[in-house]
Structure formats: structure tokens, C-alpha cells
Length: 286
Image (tube, rainbow, N blue to C red; front, side, top):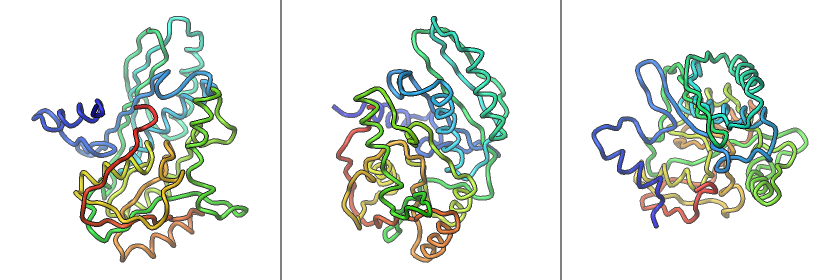
């Protein structure tokens, strides 16, 4: 059976009522607008962590989409479904207000309802930069790379990126997330992302895993990929919220130097070629 989400999006895209579907957000005038939702039991479980961590993660995930398109988050609308037995509404408001203030985002509206489970959906409006980074164009010969944070004690690419797959499996099996996990709490690097966006040909944030993001890029650009390294945990790891970039050969050296400046590794793992890419695995919350 074909992925129902994919079928719905394809049908909607083909209709005359859609506009801008296919990127992390959509450009409307001077703003980039993005929306993402978090459902209890689908995207998270309450047992996985504190309310503070869950809510902050949902907000950061949406900010990631805005930064990915080279925009600065400015305004937010929140749709919130509060369970009938929920007793932490005041705390939830405090958490959201604090994190929004920390990123300079103004809350301008939304909707609240009472339901069976906790659910929240953010719509973020970001001020568009001079250049908007889309998921195309990518051409034959362009390099595909992702950013991976490093530390003075551990400069290995594989250690910094890809751990979320193990953390996800642990959460699903034991209803707990390992400490210091970026699956629990994504870390965004807006200054670095905005700098990289200026030299990249195309890009997107890594939410479902590189294997799934490549399928989206391949379809939009009618390309396939030649891989330089074996497909391991780095390839399938979800919710990394690092950036996946397409870079022209002439910009590769500059990109590598920029990554070092921000204490990251630029991991070049593939090159675009003619052909058709096949995704061989489902997303974890499909």
C-alpha cells in the first residue's frame, strides 16, 4: 500500500488550490511560513520526558524549518489541544512564553481546545533573507553533505551524527530517552545555518532521516545519487535537525572551511547523478 501521507500530498499538489508545497516552508511576500504538528502517541509519548522538553522540542522543530529556508523567525501561532485531565496548562503557557522570548518570536494567535490527548501545532512566520534556500535546483555533479557537530575530545563524524536512531529505538522499547540525546532536545545552530545557506545551491533540515530526505530531493530535481560511504546509522537516523545541503564543486572548499569555523564537520557522502532514487525504508512514525 502506498504511503497515505504521500498520496494525499501528491493529490493536493496536483490540484489548482495548492501553492509552494515541497519545501520546508512557503514564501509569502516578505515572510517564510512553516507549520508542523506534534501528536501524543504518534510523535511523542508523555513518558519520554518532561513537559518542558517535549514542548520545547516541538517549537525548535518548527524554527528549524524557518532557518533552513534562510529566514529569521518573528511570529508564531499556536494550536493546542489540552487533555481533559491535564493540570499543567499554566506551566505550559510559561514554557512557551519563555522559549518564544528566547528566540525573539512574538505569539500572535492560534486556537485552544480540550480533547483526549496532548497535541500542539505551530505556524511560524520568518522574515525572509536576501536569498531564500529551496530544495532545488540540484544538478548532476553537485555534492550532497550534512553538518555534524564536533568537540575537542571527539572529532569523529560518525560519533556526533546518527545517534538518534539508537535513542529512538530505546524510547520505543523502554519508554525513556537516553540522557543528553538530541532526539529529546534538538540543538539548532542558526548563525552557522544562515552562513551556509548563502553558499549552498539547495538544502533542507533532516527530520525523517537522510534516506527519506534524499527521496524528496530526488523527486523534485529528477536525480539519483552516487554514494561515497556505506549506509549505516547516519543514513537512517531521524530527527537530527542538522542541515542537508547540495553544494557545487566550486563551493566545496569554502563550505569545509566554514564548517571548521563553527566547530562542525561537513560530511560529503554523495554526488548527484542521472537516474531515479528509490527509498527502501518507511519513516518511524508512518
